[in-house]
Image (cartoon, rainbow, N blue to C red; front, side, top):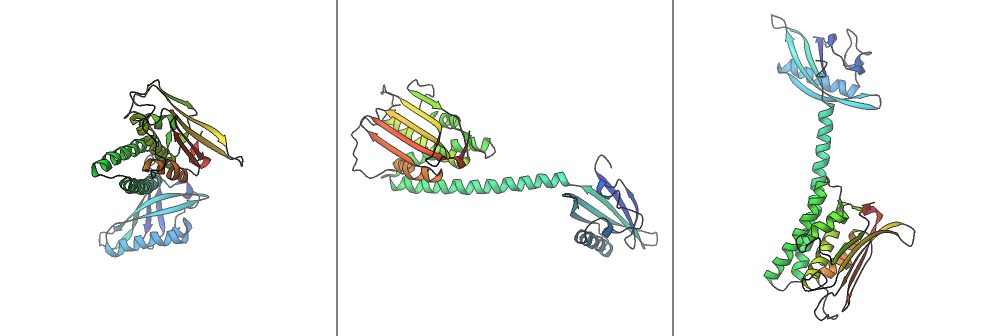
Length: 313
């Protein structure tokens, strides 16, 4: 019983304790022969336990109740199993109670509930992102086939970033892991035209998912028309570094610089596309930063600041 943290208690028919074995430490100085529950626990807990025993007496069916018992500044959870003991003539002799410490089980239940709440919260956030991606992709696409191709790529980008976040128990993702996961589908990660420099910060979940989406848009454009196109002899430099705002607050600065961007004429009068909206409006709002997206016949530069609440170095 001691190894299993089990205590046995016996009460007379008038609910006074007459015998005990393996009392928990908190009761060893309180328990005495003839005491009642009021001497061992607070009034609310004693009433709950007495109600359980009275039901066992009334129904003849063993009763179980869980009670949180305060011990100084902490508390422990116990399960009380109460069963009636009868004389040979059927008269009530007393109540036998088995008391089991379930504090560890309760702690695990609390952790599981917290994790399930976190999963629910993250799932809702992810579904909201997917809904936005679907709506905006449809808005900027003229055909169903075009929509499906772009939408699949963006959802896969989110999936890859989400895998990194999930593997970390929803803590986030390292920047270089994020870059690698987004590059793998579209190009050789050892391509000499690609250079990744600077810090390797730990991005919190929201920042990791959205920066992954930004990388996806930049990489798709680079492999299709720009510096990572198979015919291109130019290059892409990705850099992220610690910096400070004008107010002296810590921040990250993410930069993408690509030469030979778009081997097609650039029409500045054309309406903004989904990628531009993601890079210039959506991502900065999520990471509480600012973005600058410049492109011309010489290349493209994208610069994004990330507030300190969204990363850890």
